[in-house]
Length: 220
Image 1 (tube, one colour):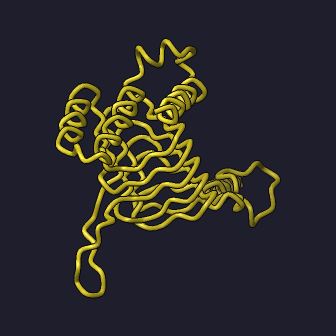
Image 2: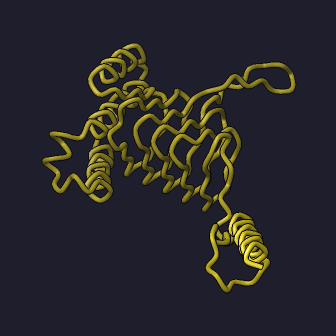
């Protein structure tokens, strides 16, 4: 029980350090629906592991009603877990979450049915998140995939494949953002080299030149 209490304290510290709107432990305990859901999960997971599965599921459904956050008691969640806002979050039965993970409202860690080579259904149906993952609002992570450490997933992204460590993923379907690739500015200033000038700006210059030539012909 002492270790469980330490984990709850780490969850409280996670809320204070990552939520600018929360400045004290009292505020976390009184006002954070994410913390309420995670704390209830800690109890429900203990009950689940002890064999009181119906009780654990019943309590988890009750907390879903109170907080809008659904966490299956069989899921495995590390310390320092923070759910910001929380409404609409779903964490499935075989989900595994590492330490210091942050997720925002509307996130789904959902399951897909997977079969092995013999045609038998695989028990692992939900994602595994490693340490220090951040998942933006509305993102959907589906299936028994692995999200590496320090990964950032953008809002409303849909992730269906493994993501390596230290990546940023956005879009539908999710794609890795190349941080090293530098994009050219959309509009270049006058005096830039011809190959760097935006096509639209180049066309406007050509039109201006044609208009000037037409005016000169009329004057002559």
